[in-house]
Length: 269
Ligand SMILES: Nc1ncnc2c1ncn2[C@@H]1O[C@H](COP(=O)(O)OP(=O)(O)OP(=O)(O)O)[C@@H](O)[C@H]1O
Image (cartoon, rainbow, N blue to C red; front, top):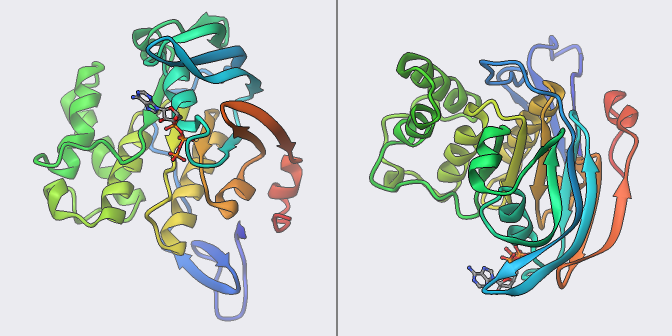
């Protein structure tokens, strides 16, 4: 998979060309970050983290450091503990050991994570079905102190970025599964987070929309965020700068990749 600018006789070079398995499509605009604030540009440090439910660990001794600008993929079979790890990083699932930090700030609770600019796109989107797509984005922004006019502007911008610019006033229950997933991605993007945790953000998407969401997450990373994505999709994992594979809650292997390759538009191996 390659995402990059391409200039041909028929393509004047406007927009972004997305190539997937020999097919290509041109997104309308180069992805722009939905951004209202400077990113803190701090690393996410995870040291020996274990955690689970009701006193039983399902994630064991996970450790990594992700830098601003990085996309890190967490892969592994169903039940390996990928979602649990993200909820633990979000401070919402109790860690039984280890530590999570954004820069020097220790994440010990959900409130700490929100304070440090960590935001999670949960698996299954977690949108309120009886609110509109835009309301689902605006309400959490208002809850974190964003001014109403700004919140509405950010919701409109992020919905536009995921290709739902005309669907903001649709109830979530009126949207398709893939549209709901894109609305959830828009909610994550609208947060202008320092650390984005996305739990299988492309699982319900067609190839073009999958590439669109990955390009938007890449734009967030370029703006200085740390991006962590769980995925079963090898193409999405290949898009990442590094990959951690979990099996039965333990890191079984790690892949790193030179980001310079991506900057040159070299296809992922
Ligand atoms: N709320 C919960 N209470 C108790 N156990 C849970 C809970 N959520 C998940 N688990 C258990 O934790 C383990 C890891 O689940 P988790 O959802 O983190 O895996 P995953 O790798 O994200 O799976 P998938 O790829 O299917 O989404 C599983 O054995 C699951 O049954």
